[in-house]
Length: 164
Image (cartoon, rainbow, N blue to C red; front, side):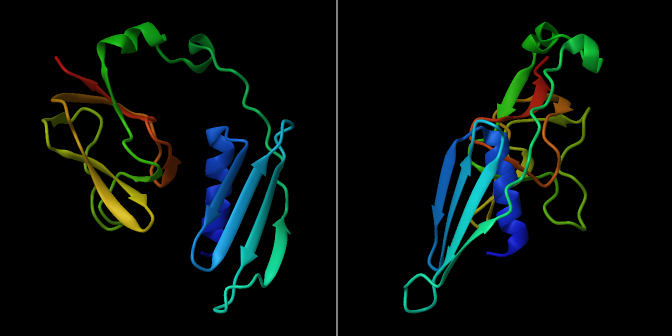
């Protein structure tokens, strides 16, 4: 696991609101704790082939400001009541959301596209496995709720679909 993957994991944990996450793999153990003040402490322990701890290093705590609560009037978006007629497609797993099958390919779907059951909407990478997320509904894509290459949680809304 490289530094960029660890940084992405830290960002993901900060967004998720979890107070502590522990990740153990063959040769590395990571503990991420988020405090009440938005400070994060991350410990990375790396094990050599023998299996004993080689080093423990705290990564620099990151200061994160809590985003100001947004109201529909301040963001220029429609009130949530208008979205109630839409079906929300949610993430079935935790991972990294990708709109394309690979960097040099076009996106699976765009806003305004008509989809049917079984169409691939996106890919979510989890543990180096790329999982195609298929639609369980038919309709028109109204909104993409997640940015490409960003971490997603289980049951996080990904798309809004107009079934009519």
